[in-house]
Length: 164
Image (cartoon, rainbow, N blue to C red):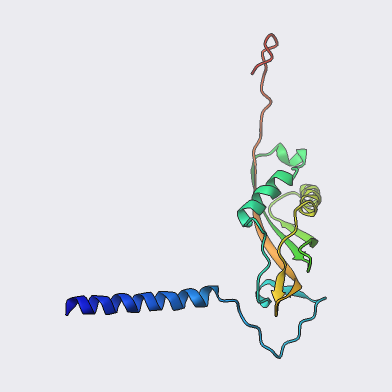
């Protein structure tokens, strides 16, 4: 009898777990009455399938860090710089309308860093576009980013060997 109760309990748990997974990963169905305007920029939460970076967001951050050149005025001071990067993923996956918000910095540093962020974002590979009713649409995304600026002192080299 106990074996039967345990079996029923496991069957119930398995069934509940599967229905939870189906709801979690099912492709959302949009309302049939809505029309898709291909030139409209949709917010991230308005699309059926979200845009995503093909290699994952961690790889996006890693590549962005490699492409971002930090101006020398900022590199002289160590610390963390909080920023928010807003951009539009176009229907073909390209990035456009790049805007940044950099927090707790001097205005002249913000301007130079913003210019470099936009340059780095323009060099980034294409994303997979968001979709509504299986049609690619333009989607606005906001990505938070924390830049860790480390001051690196020049290594003193032995003039005889050329080694540090």
